Image (cartoon, rainbow, N blue to C red; front, side, top):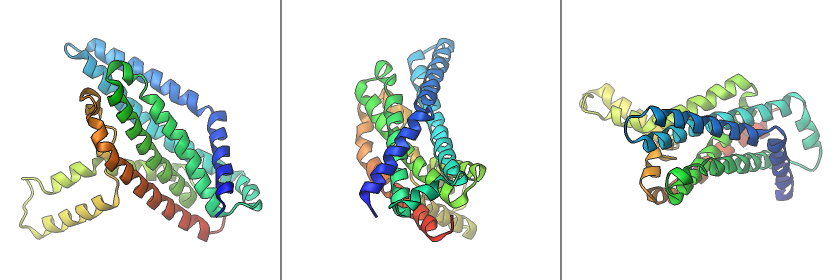
Length: 257
């Protein structure tokens, strides 16, 4: 694999992100989130600042995850449908170099969006808490970008890709709660079915990133508490981005385009 070729593909991906007005779309999302947060704070009877912070953080997080999925999936689908990828691969660019370059470009683009999304929170929360939240969001969006790229090259259909990534994200976000419910007091711990289900849930939890530990709104009201979670988040992000990339790259290199 040529790292120079990957760097060229990554640069082209960043230019594409700028030319397709991804930054302006993300900015529109953030402005909408700010307006929604102000409306919620105005309606709150007490602790309006907490409402303002939590509404903005939750809405922005979900909106940027959706925007990342759509941008990555649509970009790859358009390249495959227009046969632009044939032109790229006809040059001294291997499939692995193209894939890694695309992944790097998408990851840098969405990571910047995550950091920028935290800027308004620096004025309503502490700057350190906002920075921790923004770094965590950037890591979360990188995982979503990797999942979207791998799903796009494997499924080659926009709707299927968006549904697959959406299911992956929702399941990863809810996995912590599902694990707790499988071991909850309402479960008959001695029943064979309960034991089997609990083991299956635990196995599935090991395969998915613990996204419920990422980008918590509670960090924004707890000072620099989010920084304690960042090392584990960074390690987990590297592992799952690498795993998702390996799955997508394996499928991409072995099939006909």
